[in-house]
Image (tube, rainbow, N blue to C red; front, side, top):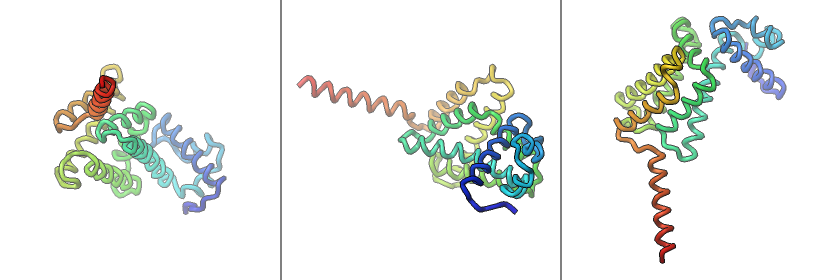
Length: 217
């Protein structure tokens, strides 16, 4: 049974175990990172790992949660600063992929290798579904949560995942940052959305023009 208590020391230990597990997954892959391997690497007894996470499945679910939350929080911060939704989304995904290239591979591996009825696969399913919903509600993709809007959101996620795979296989031929920027500009043009930097430049020009008029009086 997973421990739900939250002592300061216990929280630090749990966060370290999750960080160590993520590090090992980046080296060995999610399917080849066992609790025994984590125990040996972290210097923590296997029983202690189980006390914190309940099972290996519980540990994997927490890893998946933390990876999704990382992107979500980053996008939220960008939007709170007034960034346009679509450019902000592309920028944060680019940063996430470059900083943790192994992360997206975790989702693909779990989708393809976990049994359909496993809690891990169900969790990944829920996260993708919620992500489509949030994109539908926050981007100009039509009526929020409508069938067409959700489908457009799924195409956007497919774009991220597809470019990630091609970049991961051949980073020289498919440079991630440049390719995602190209994709962003194509979508902005297709959906007739305004690019935030253009709006920002327009406002800057207006302010300069206003100052010039005041200075000439």
